[in-house]
Amino acid sequence: MIRVLISGHRVDWDEYGELLSAALTDAGIDAEVIHETRPRSPETIDYIVYAPWSDMKDFSPFTGAKAVINLWAGVEGVVTNETLKVPLARMVDPGLTGGMVEWCVAHALRHHLGIDRDICRRDAVWDPHLPPLARERPLTILGFGVLGQAVAEALSGLGFPVTGWSRSAKDVAGVTCLSGEDGLVAALRRAELLILLLPLTPATEEIMNSERLALLPKGAILINPGRGPLIDDNALLAALDSGHIAHATLDVFREEPLPGDHPFWAHPGITVTPHIASGTRPDTAVEIIVENIRRGEAGEPLLHLVDRSLGY
Ligand code: NAP
Image (cartoon, rainbow, N blue to C red; front, side, top):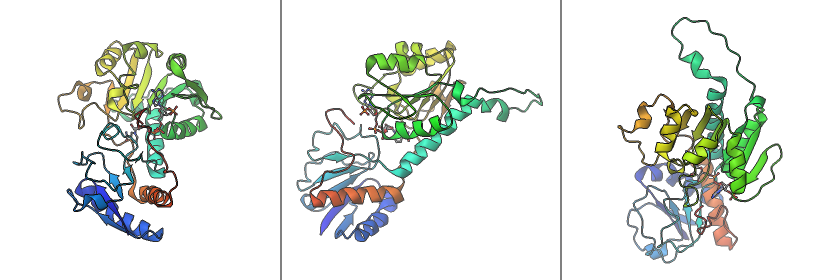
Protein backbone atom coordinates (compact mmCIF):
# COMPACT_ATOMS: atom_id res chain seq x y z
CA MET A 1 0.00 0.00 0.00
CA ILE A 2 1.26 3.49 -0.83
CA ARG A 3 0.62 6.58 1.31
CA VAL A 4 -0.52 9.84 -0.27
CA LEU A 5 -0.46 13.02 1.81
CA ILE A 6 -2.74 15.93 0.94
CA SER A 7 -0.79 18.86 2.29
CA GLY A 8 -3.02 21.87 2.50
CA HIS A 9 -5.74 23.38 4.58
CA ARG A 10 -8.90 21.67 5.72
CA VAL A 11 -10.70 22.91 2.60
CA ASP A 12 -8.31 20.99 0.33
CA TRP A 13 -8.90 17.81 2.29
CA ASP A 14 -12.68 18.31 2.16
CA GLU A 15 -12.55 18.82 -1.61
CA TYR A 16 -9.99 16.21 -2.57
CA GLY A 17 -9.89 13.54 0.16
CA GLU A 18 -12.85 11.39 -0.85
CA LEU A 19 -12.52 11.99 -4.59
CA LEU A 20 -8.84 11.07 -4.59
CA SER A 21 -9.37 7.90 -2.54
CA ALA A 22 -12.14 6.80 -4.91
CA ALA A 23 -10.13 7.59 -8.05
CA LEU A 24 -7.10 5.67 -6.72
CA THR A 25 -9.31 2.69 -5.98
CA ASP A 26 -10.85 2.89 -9.47
CA ALA A 27 -7.33 2.88 -10.93
CA GLY A 28 -6.50 -0.25 -8.95
CA ILE A 29 -3.94 1.55 -6.78
CA ASP A 30 -3.89 0.39 -3.18
CA ALA A 31 -3.40 3.65 -1.30
CA GLU A 32 -4.04 5.37 1.99
CA VAL A 33 -4.87 9.07 1.54
CA ILE A 34 -4.10 11.14 4.61
CA HIS A 35 -4.33 14.73 5.72
CA GLU A 36 -2.34 15.70 8.78
CA THR A 37 -0.51 18.94 9.38
CA ARG A 38 2.39 17.00 10.89
CA PRO A 39 1.98 13.45 9.58
CA ARG A 40 3.24 10.58 11.68
CA SER A 41 6.08 8.63 10.05
CA PRO A 42 6.68 11.20 7.27
CA GLU A 43 9.36 8.91 5.85
CA THR A 44 6.60 6.50 4.78
CA ILE A 45 4.76 9.03 2.58
CA ASP A 46 5.09 8.16 -1.11
CA TYR A 47 3.44 11.17 -2.79
CA ILE A 48 2.64 14.67 -1.58
CA VAL A 49 -0.31 16.46 -3.15
CA TYR A 50 0.64 20.03 -2.40
CA ALA A 51 -1.59 23.07 -2.08
CA PRO A 52 0.39 26.30 -2.47
CA TRP A 53 -1.12 27.78 0.70
CA SER A 54 0.04 24.76 2.71
CA ASP A 55 1.88 25.54 5.95
CA MET A 56 4.37 22.83 5.05
CA LYS A 57 7.60 24.41 3.93
CA ASP A 58 10.08 21.68 4.92
CA PHE A 59 10.06 18.59 2.74
CA SER A 60 13.17 17.06 4.34
CA PRO A 61 11.33 14.64 6.72
CA PHE A 62 9.69 13.00 3.68
CA THR A 63 12.70 10.87 2.85
CA GLY A 64 10.66 8.23 1.00
CA ALA A 65 8.66 10.65 -1.16
CA LYS A 66 8.73 9.93 -4.88
CA ALA A 67 7.15 13.18 -6.12
CA VAL A 68 5.32 16.33 -5.14
CA ILE A 69 2.20 17.03 -7.18
CA ASN A 70 1.19 20.70 -7.07
CA LEU A 71 -2.52 21.45 -7.03
CA TRP A 72 -2.08 24.69 -8.97
CA ALA A 73 -0.68 25.46 -12.43
CA GLY A 74 1.59 28.15 -10.94
CA VAL A 75 4.52 26.79 -8.94
CA GLU A 76 6.31 29.97 -7.85
CA GLY A 77 5.39 29.24 -4.21
CA VAL A 78 7.23 25.91 -4.13
CA VAL A 79 9.72 25.75 -7.00
CA THR A 80 12.56 27.47 -5.12
CA ASN A 81 12.12 25.40 -1.93
CA GLU A 82 15.58 23.94 -1.35
CA THR A 83 14.28 21.14 0.89
CA LEU A 84 12.39 19.74 -2.10
CA LYS A 85 14.64 17.11 -3.70
CA VAL A 86 12.12 15.01 -5.64
CA PRO A 87 10.37 15.71 -8.97
CA LEU A 88 7.72 18.43 -8.88
CA ALA A 89 4.68 18.18 -11.16
CA ARG A 90 2.37 21.12 -11.75
CA MET A 91 -1.36 20.99 -12.40
CA VAL A 92 -2.65 20.77 -15.93
CA ASP A 93 -6.35 20.12 -15.51
CA PRO A 94 -8.97 20.25 -18.27
CA GLY A 95 -11.37 21.93 -15.85
CA LEU A 96 -8.84 24.62 -15.01
CA THR A 97 -8.04 25.15 -18.70
CA GLY A 98 -11.72 25.40 -19.61
CA GLY A 99 -12.32 27.94 -16.86
CA MET A 100 -9.42 30.08 -18.02
CA VAL A 101 -10.64 30.04 -21.61
CA GLU A 102 -14.10 31.20 -20.53
CA TRP A 103 -12.74 33.97 -18.28
CA CYS A 104 -10.34 35.30 -20.93
CA VAL A 105 -12.93 35.17 -23.73
CA ALA A 106 -15.47 36.97 -21.52
CA HIS A 107 -13.09 39.77 -20.56
CA ALA A 108 -11.66 40.13 -24.07
CA LEU A 109 -15.19 40.42 -25.52
CA ARG A 110 -16.24 42.87 -22.81
CA HIS A 111 -13.58 45.30 -23.97
CA HIS A 112 -13.71 44.44 -27.65
CA LEU A 113 -17.46 45.08 -27.89
CA GLY A 114 -17.49 47.99 -25.44
CA ILE A 115 -20.12 46.18 -23.41
CA ASP A 116 -19.77 48.52 -20.40
CA ARG A 117 -21.08 51.39 -22.49
CA ASP A 118 -24.48 49.70 -22.76
CA ILE A 119 -24.87 47.76 -19.55
CA CYS A 120 -23.85 50.69 -17.35
CA ARG A 121 -26.26 53.07 -19.13
CA ARG A 122 -29.06 54.49 -16.94
CA ASP A 123 -29.44 57.92 -18.60
CA ALA A 124 -32.07 57.05 -21.26
CA VAL A 125 -29.66 58.04 -24.04
CA TRP A 126 -30.14 56.01 -27.24
CA ASP A 127 -26.57 55.80 -28.47
CA PRO A 128 -26.06 53.26 -31.24
CA HIS A 129 -22.50 52.26 -31.97
CA LEU A 130 -20.99 49.65 -34.22
CA PRO A 131 -18.12 47.75 -32.63
CA PRO A 132 -15.37 46.46 -34.92
CA LEU A 133 -15.34 42.78 -35.78
CA ALA A 134 -12.91 40.49 -34.00
CA ARG A 135 -10.90 40.15 -37.21
CA GLU A 136 -10.08 43.86 -36.96
CA ARG A 137 -8.70 43.62 -33.38
CA PRO A 138 -5.18 42.15 -33.11
CA LEU A 139 -4.73 40.32 -29.82
CA THR A 140 -1.52 39.08 -28.22
CA ILE A 141 -1.04 36.44 -25.56
CA LEU A 142 2.26 36.48 -23.63
CA GLY A 143 2.84 32.95 -22.36
CA PHE A 144 1.90 30.43 -24.99
CA GLY A 145 1.75 27.23 -22.96
CA VAL A 146 -1.19 25.06 -21.97
CA LEU A 147 -3.45 27.96 -21.00
CA GLY A 148 -2.20 30.51 -23.55
CA GLN A 149 -2.72 28.09 -26.43
CA ALA A 150 -6.20 27.07 -25.28
CA VAL A 151 -7.21 30.74 -24.97
CA ALA A 152 -5.66 31.45 -28.40
CA GLU A 153 -7.65 28.66 -30.00
CA ALA A 154 -10.93 30.02 -28.64
CA LEU A 155 -10.20 33.64 -29.55
CA SER A 156 -8.84 32.89 -33.01
CA GLY A 157 -11.96 30.77 -33.51
CA LEU A 158 -13.95 33.97 -32.96
CA GLY A 159 -11.87 35.71 -35.61
CA PHE A 160 -9.28 37.64 -33.59
CA PRO A 161 -5.86 37.77 -35.28
CA VAL A 162 -3.93 36.15 -32.40
CA THR A 163 -0.20 36.36 -31.73
CA GLY A 164 1.29 34.07 -29.09
CA TRP A 165 4.68 34.72 -27.51
CA SER A 166 6.75 32.14 -25.65
CA ARG A 167 10.32 31.38 -24.61
CA SER A 168 10.81 28.65 -27.20
CA ALA A 169 9.71 28.94 -30.84
CA LYS A 170 6.37 27.34 -31.68
CA ASP A 171 4.29 26.55 -34.74
CA VAL A 172 0.56 26.57 -34.06
CA ALA A 173 -1.93 26.66 -36.93
CA GLY A 174 -3.96 29.85 -37.23
CA VAL A 175 -1.81 31.83 -34.76
CA THR A 176 1.28 33.98 -35.31
CA CYS A 177 3.91 32.46 -33.02
CA LEU A 178 6.75 34.66 -31.81
CA SER A 179 9.56 34.17 -29.33
CA GLY A 180 12.65 35.98 -28.05
CA GLU A 181 13.16 39.68 -27.37
CA ASP A 182 12.53 40.77 -30.99
CA GLY A 183 9.39 38.67 -30.98
CA LEU A 184 8.24 40.36 -27.79
CA VAL A 185 8.60 43.82 -29.29
CA ALA A 186 6.62 42.79 -32.37
CA ALA A 187 3.98 41.01 -30.26
CA LEU A 188 3.44 44.09 -28.08
CA ARG A 189 3.41 46.63 -30.94
CA ARG A 190 0.36 44.94 -32.47
CA ALA A 191 -1.50 44.12 -29.22
CA GLU A 192 -4.74 46.09 -29.08
CA LEU A 193 -5.73 43.45 -26.54
CA LEU A 194 -2.97 41.91 -24.43
CA ILE A 195 -3.46 38.84 -22.24
CA LEU A 196 -0.73 37.76 -19.80
CA LEU A 197 -0.52 34.02 -19.22
CA LEU A 198 3.12 33.74 -18.24
CA PRO A 199 4.34 32.00 -15.11
CA LEU A 200 6.09 34.14 -12.51
CA THR A 201 9.83 33.47 -12.69
CA PRO A 202 12.94 35.65 -12.32
CA ALA A 203 12.84 36.10 -16.13
CA THR A 204 9.21 37.25 -16.29
CA GLU A 205 8.95 39.42 -13.17
CA GLU A 206 7.92 42.96 -14.21
CA ILE A 207 8.14 41.96 -17.85
CA MET A 208 5.46 44.62 -18.39
CA ASN A 209 7.54 47.61 -17.29
CA SER A 210 7.12 51.17 -18.53
CA GLU A 211 9.19 50.57 -21.70
CA ARG A 212 7.17 47.53 -22.71
CA LEU A 213 3.84 49.17 -21.83
CA ALA A 214 4.88 52.05 -24.11
CA LEU A 215 5.22 49.61 -27.02
CA LEU A 216 1.49 48.82 -26.91
CA PRO A 217 -0.77 50.72 -29.34
CA LYS A 218 -2.47 53.72 -27.77
CA GLY A 219 -5.75 52.69 -26.17
CA ALA A 220 -4.68 49.07 -25.64
CA ILE A 221 -6.45 46.85 -23.14
CA LEU A 222 -4.41 44.72 -20.73
CA ILE A 223 -5.87 41.56 -19.18
CA ASN A 224 -3.77 39.79 -16.53
CA PRO A 225 -4.82 36.38 -15.24
CA GLY A 226 -1.14 35.29 -15.04
CA ARG A 227 0.54 36.62 -11.90
CA GLY A 228 0.54 40.11 -10.34
CA PRO A 229 4.31 40.73 -10.36
CA LEU A 230 4.43 40.29 -14.15
CA ILE A 231 3.48 43.99 -14.18
CA ASP A 232 5.22 47.01 -12.70
CA ASP A 233 2.20 48.40 -10.83
CA ASN A 234 3.34 52.03 -10.86
CA ALA A 235 4.18 51.89 -14.57
CA LEU A 236 0.70 50.53 -15.25
CA LEU A 237 -0.95 53.30 -13.21
CA ALA A 238 1.08 55.91 -15.11
CA ALA A 239 0.16 54.35 -18.48
CA LEU A 240 -3.54 54.37 -17.52
CA ASP A 241 -3.40 57.94 -16.23
CA SER A 242 -1.76 59.16 -19.45
CA GLY A 243 -4.47 57.40 -21.50
CA HIS A 244 -1.92 55.19 -23.25
CA ILE A 245 -3.63 52.11 -21.81
CA ALA A 246 -7.42 52.34 -21.91
CA HIS A 247 -8.21 49.69 -19.31
CA ALA A 248 -6.62 46.91 -17.29
CA THR A 249 -8.53 43.89 -16.01
CA LEU A 250 -6.45 42.31 -13.28
CA ASP A 251 -7.13 38.99 -11.59
CA VAL A 252 -3.81 38.53 -9.79
CA PHE A 253 -1.76 40.84 -7.61
CA ARG A 254 1.60 41.26 -5.90
CA GLU A 255 -0.24 40.93 -2.59
CA GLU A 256 -3.43 38.86 -2.30
CA PRO A 257 -6.03 39.65 -1.14
CA LEU A 258 -5.39 43.06 -2.71
CA PRO A 259 -5.14 45.47 0.26
CA GLY A 260 -8.21 47.69 0.72
CA ASP A 261 -6.20 50.90 0.28
CA HIS A 262 -4.47 49.79 -2.91
CA PRO A 263 -4.97 52.37 -5.71
CA PHE A 264 -6.12 49.63 -8.12
CA TRP A 265 -9.47 49.33 -6.30
CA ALA A 266 -10.55 52.90 -6.94
CA HIS A 267 -8.96 53.47 -10.34
CA PRO A 268 -11.65 53.97 -13.02
CA GLY A 269 -9.44 52.31 -15.61
CA ILE A 270 -8.95 49.09 -13.63
CA THR A 271 -11.23 46.13 -13.07
CA VAL A 272 -10.19 43.96 -10.12
CA THR A 273 -11.29 40.33 -9.95
CA PRO A 274 -10.26 38.31 -6.87
CA HIS A 275 -7.96 35.64 -8.39
CA ILE A 276 -10.93 33.76 -9.84
CA ALA A 277 -9.91 33.54 -13.50
CA SER A 278 -9.75 29.81 -13.07
CA GLY A 279 -9.28 27.29 -10.34
CA THR A 280 -8.29 23.65 -10.27
CA ARG A 281 -11.48 21.55 -10.41
CA PRO A 282 -11.24 18.61 -8.00
CA ASP A 283 -13.26 16.18 -10.14
CA THR A 284 -10.99 16.53 -13.18
CA ALA A 285 -7.78 17.22 -11.24
CA VAL A 286 -7.89 13.95 -9.28
CA GLU A 287 -7.68 12.08 -12.60
CA ILE A 288 -4.41 13.89 -13.36
CA ILE A 289 -3.07 13.25 -9.84
CA VAL A 290 -3.92 9.56 -10.06
CA GLU A 291 -2.34 9.25 -13.50
CA ASN A 292 0.87 10.73 -12.14
CA ILE A 293 0.83 8.37 -9.16
CA ARG A 294 0.25 5.46 -11.52
CA ARG A 295 3.19 6.59 -13.63
CA GLY A 296 5.35 7.01 -10.55
CA GLU A 297 4.57 3.49 -9.41
CA ALA A 298 5.16 2.08 -12.91
CA GLY A 299 8.52 3.84 -13.19
CA GLU A 300 7.23 6.00 -16.07
CA PRO A 301 8.04 9.72 -16.39
CA LEU A 302 5.51 11.96 -14.65
CA LEU A 303 3.30 14.32 -16.62
CA HIS A 304 3.75 18.10 -16.42
CA LEU A 305 7.10 18.07 -14.65
CA VAL A 306 8.46 21.45 -13.64
CA ASP A 307 11.90 22.45 -14.93
CA ARG A 308 13.26 23.85 -11.69
CA SER A 309 16.13 25.63 -13.44
CA LEU A 310 13.57 27.65 -15.45
CA GLY A 311 11.15 28.06 -12.53
CA TYR A 312 8.05 26.71 -14.30
P1 NAP B 1 2.74 26.66 -19.10
O1 NAP B 1 2.04 25.61 -19.89
O2 NAP B 1 4.01 26.29 -18.39
O3 NAP B 1 3.02 27.87 -20.10
C1 NAP B 1 3.86 28.93 -19.75
C2 NAP B 1 4.19 29.70 -21.01
O4 NAP B 1 5.00 30.83 -20.65
C3 NAP B 1 5.01 28.88 -22.01
O5 NAP B 1 4.62 29.18 -23.32
C4 NAP B 1 6.43 29.36 -21.77
O6 NAP B 1 7.28 29.25 -22.88
C5 NAP B 1 6.17 30.82 -21.47
N1 NAP B 1 7.29 31.41 -20.77
C6 NAP B 1 7.81 31.08 -19.55
N2 NAP B 1 8.88 31.86 -19.27
C7 NAP B 1 9.05 32.67 -20.33
C8 NAP B 1 9.98 33.68 -20.65
N3 NAP B 1 10.97 34.01 -19.82
N4 NAP B 1 9.86 34.31 -21.83
C9 NAP B 1 8.87 33.98 -22.70
N5 NAP B 1 7.94 33.02 -22.46
C10 NAP B 1 8.04 32.38 -21.29
O7 NAP B 1 1.79 27.28 -18.00
P2 NAP B 1 0.19 27.39 -18.02
O8 NAP B 1 -0.41 26.16 -17.51
O9 NAP B 1 -0.23 27.88 -19.35
O10 NAP B 1 -0.05 28.51 -16.90
C11 NAP B 1 0.48 29.82 -17.06
C12 NAP B 1 0.30 30.62 -15.79
O11 NAP B 1 -1.07 30.98 -15.62
C13 NAP B 1 0.63 29.88 -14.49
O12 NAP B 1 2.01 29.82 -14.24
C14 NAP B 1 -0.09 30.73 -13.47
O13 NAP B 1 0.76 31.77 -13.04
C15 NAP B 1 -1.25 31.34 -14.26
N6 NAP B 1 -2.57 30.83 -13.79
C16 NAP B 1 -3.45 31.71 -13.24
C17 NAP B 1 -4.71 31.27 -12.82
C18 NAP B 1 -5.72 32.23 -12.26
O14 NAP B 1 -6.77 31.81 -11.76
N7 NAP B 1 -5.49 33.53 -12.34
C19 NAP B 1 -5.05 29.92 -12.95
C20 NAP B 1 -4.12 29.05 -13.51
C21 NAP B 1 -2.88 29.52 -13.94
P3 NAP B 1 7.66 27.82 -23.51
O15 NAP B 1 6.38 27.35 -24.19
O16 NAP B 1 8.73 28.11 -24.47
O17 NAP B 1 8.05 26.95 -22.35
